[in-house]
View 1: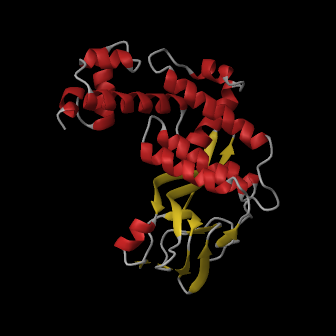
View 2: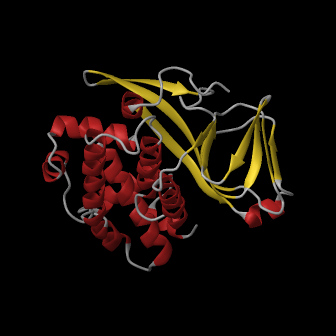
Length: 284
């Protein structure tokens, strides 16, 4: 695995990097006991970025062998042969972010997406870091994903970007411009989540977080992978699913609580998103 494929990891790469997270796991002692302290894959299905928070072991990717120990970050792409073996008395336990990704270039308003299948991140396969912020970021990604709260995919994605920012060579954190945009979009997402019952439009939300509508649209899609209206609609449908599973509220009341004024329109949108009407979803 070549850790320097393409441009080096830096702020230009991070502004083009669009991950879609599949899962976040904590490979702990119990996991290793159940797997006899070894994982072997003939072909990995996802890209992986991981942080070893305790223990030791070894990573073999194709024919290359690397040492795993506390405080190391490792990564590998999809589509490769893999073996991880850990010490039984002190197994290498790690947070693992599994994902796919693309690189986006904007030509005016048109995105040009380059999907990365076997292309690794432009980092050495093993990175030893003494930054105190790395472990808490990976732990937060795991906790956010495990809680599966409203907007958890977005928050897991931003924590992954934050982890990569900490690994940019020569710095312990990203420059002010990137976190400022990330914080603005994060604030926008938080506002959307707490105001789902109210009318939400791109222009007013952009103004609330101090971005122009045009830049907000570009940044929002880049950081979340969705356009504004699609993201709002997705959150409303997710919240409606929660109400349908956990309450006996009427469909009309659920529609109102997630920001739809017309329950019939809500039912049509819900059916397009899930394949079934709300009343049938409640019976699943």
